[in-house]
Every structure is written in C-alpha cells, then in structure tokens.
Length: 198
Image (tube, rainbow, N blue to C red; front, side):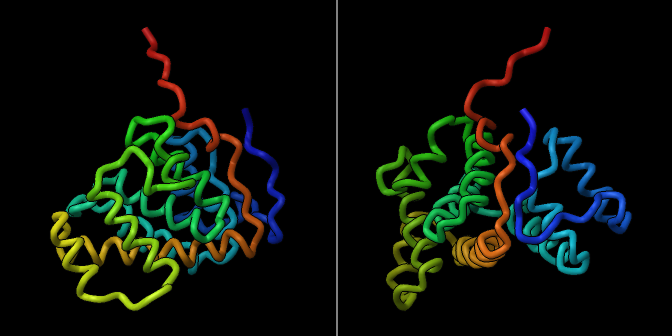
C-alpha cells in the first residue's frame, strides 16, 4: 500500500532540494517507518521552522526522563487532536498510540470518547486536563493540580501534559489550514500483529 498523493494546499518540496541535515533526518524516518510521513515534507518548505518544530517535538515526545509513558503522550495528542478536529494528527498519532500500547482499538476509543476508553482513571484525569488546556474553556485552578497530584502526576508531568497539548494545538492548526492529509500507511499501523519471520 502506498501513500496517497499529496493534495495539500502547499506543494511538498523535492526531497533532493532540501538542506542536507533535513534530508538525512527525513531519510532516517523513511528507513524506520517504511514511508515518509507527510508532515516531514509539508513543513520542510521552511527549513528553519522545520528544525525548530522537530526539535521541540522530539524534546516533548522522545525524552526518557518523564513521568508520562510514550503511550500516554500519544493519548494526549490523539485526544486533543480529536478535540481540534485534526484528521492528520488523529490518524498519525493514533497509529503511534496503537504501536506503543500494543492495542489495535485503543486509539479509536481515545479519539472518539476517551472517558469510556479502556484506560486507567489516572489516564482519564490526565486527558481531562489536557482537553481543558486544549479548549481553554475555563480557568486552570489549583483543583486541577490537586487532582493530578492525587493521581501521581508531578508538577513536571503536568507541565509536560500542558506543553504537549499546546504544541500539538499549533501542529493541528498547521495541518488543518494547509490541507495536510494522513499517509495511507498510518491507517493500518498497529492494527494487526507483525508477522514473525523465521
């Protein structure tokens, strides 16, 4: 199965026209994933912004010393991207969530109604806070911090939840306004176990 053709409002730059550091990172992603996620090429039209975007992305999503698991970070992205109606991020990060959690249905549950998803009460409290930050539909009070602390989140974890939510709020808006479409490959990732080779 191949990626759907790019139908974004802004044409993707040719990979060979990109600065070497960006081209090498994109090729490394392609080597690992088997395809190039559209976001990598869509944002590469502005190399300085690409570098800043992925530096902050990686600082939030790949750091090792966090009280949030990689799966929980992807839950935040999936739930808040659904709240923002961002097809690209729901599909792409839903796929990553399925892979991290080794659960083929969890991303669909989190995107549609995380409150009834098969996740822990702690994770539901985390997503309640993330969605509140995402929608900014009320003041963030000490009560939210107290509830998060009660469920084992540190102040640094709470910062991470808010930072991930805020960063992907920007990412959602960039994907929506530019017409970025999810790669076809994302739809099936993590839905069936990988076949074991002998």
